[in-house]
Length: 71
Image (cartoon, rainbow, N blue to C red):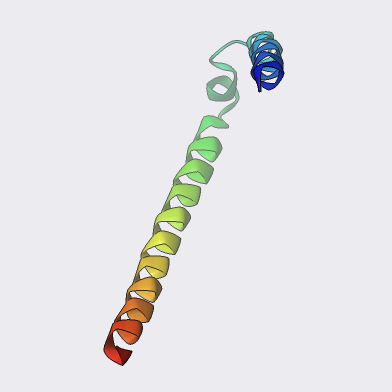
């Protein structure tokens, strides 16, 4: 278990360094006008997840009601 946590710490350290080493600066997407595409994809993904969770909640509730009515 200890080796696993040490390995994950080392991997996380190198992963963070790779992410910080990206070129282009923080305004890269804004400068080429693609920030709106990124935001639109993020919003669409979030809305899709929320819709799926609401659908799943309703389906689980109906199954729970069906099970409780049989008892």
